[in-house]
Length: 389
Image: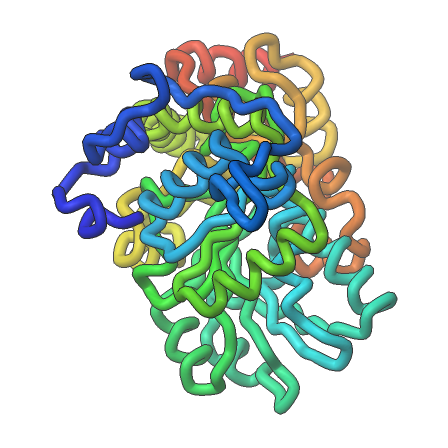
């Protein structure tokens, strides 16, 4: 449901805070928050009649409200809420058949790489991994059997930027689907569908939920026909998000803009501070003027986001950092209110083949930060004392 559907012109923050109430609707009994409809099945009024709800694997009122809200935020024709981010990516991959070919961003989440390698082995769907920040390389990788481009921007964890408008041109020229993983940015900072994408996927576990307390994933499709195909697969394979988890994501979305504004401000401050530290070799953050993708990111997003990566002088320094921070947790995941530090080579990208990690520049000296909402000076002091040992 878009702003036009609601007959009003509401700001993104208002939609997040009010959800379905933003358009004047009312929930049962005047509830201000979405009720948790914890039921597996629904009674039929009579033979051949339905309330619109028959079985929770297919549709549930709590999840339905969440899906409508995500559609409004992303500008999507339809949204499917899944049990986690990988379930969402797997659902999209079910669109493809043996022999199909997909061109994919080289540096993406390691779990996606693991899935794509499995699909190559067991289903015969082929993948070509290229540096999608270079449109010419993407164009050159397209083959007669290519069916889609799968893009993540900013890339995980190198923070490379892919020009989504250029990807849309390539996709249109070759009649390909353009699929964009928008987890790092959320629709608050970047709207791939408005830039020409056909499908947007999210790990809702991250910034959308925002509190490190539940798992979720989303598939947002632009047009009705594609949405119908995806919903058929969704009902058939059953990756549906549970009612209580749907409630938790709805609750998290209420503060998404507030959290991201603070997290992004923290990322800007930490990135600038890291560039001045003698034990840091390089900082990867699209908000830094020296970042090669800064201009492209500024043209397609309303901010550089709350993720950054950096290289330190050696593996021992990296180990000292992750083992000695007191406030920042050494943990996987991202997007929560707490700042997390990750060693991708051992965590998020451990299943990526070593030769591929080397091409991406991922070694024991490469670290990733997901900024939370803490006071930035406290974060700086924590990193400083950890680096000093």
